[in-house]
Length: 245
Ligand SMILES: Nc1ncnc2c1ncn2[C@@H]1O[C@H](COP(=O)(O)OP(=O)(O)OP(=O)(O)O)[C@@H](O)[C@H]1O
Image 1 (cartoon, rainbow, N blue to C red):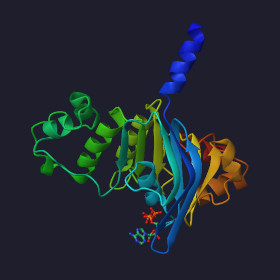
Image 2: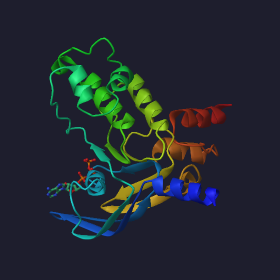
Image 3: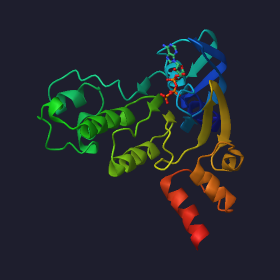
Image 4: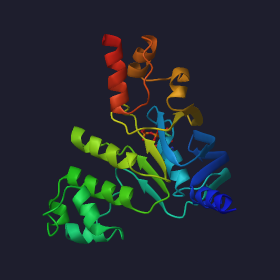
């Protein structure tokens, strides 16, 4: 009985979001989407203008579909990061970190801004500001996080840092919209947006073999019989080394 209770508690804590026959029209562009996003890291890829940003906005409720349903389960706290969206509301780094209502000290330490607490927020570099924002989002108590091109403006080390934090996030739905597949955290599910139509490619790494629009690096690996164990950078490097071994 106790085990059953525990199982129910764990299940009810898991966040998820379901799209049922969702459609959206923006001028001549049409988006249609069906699918379920469970806890874990989801990578959404697709060409420029294919509708990824619109899907992120639909998932987080920034815009509503023209028809269909979006059902959120245990997604009480939802966050969307867009490259252009950061709004500074305070003066110092400490105040800005505190404005996120999370663990202010942890946010400052994680973002590498220890010692800069009283610095004017406008004196930070673009990269530092982005790290502060990402640290606040990824350590915050969000159930659903959509990161639209989170690597934009970040250097190699900062990208690795983002991936380490994402890898440590549990029980959240994290949807990563990125055209850059060379610097990713461990990804659980792969999705593709093609000319407004959302397709679930499947669970990583099993689905990689059937990824018809796989980027050149993945295609090269598969064509050489070296199947990556995942999409994280280390997995890709390991697969490349297997070819040359
Ligand atoms: N307000 C609007 N009115 C008309 N068309 C729009 C509007 N906003 C976006 N679009 C069109 O909708 C399509 C999808 O845009 P969206 O930004 O979702 O794509 P995307 O895949 O995120 O592209 P990108 O990678 O460039 O951000 C594009 O063809 C875009 O031109």
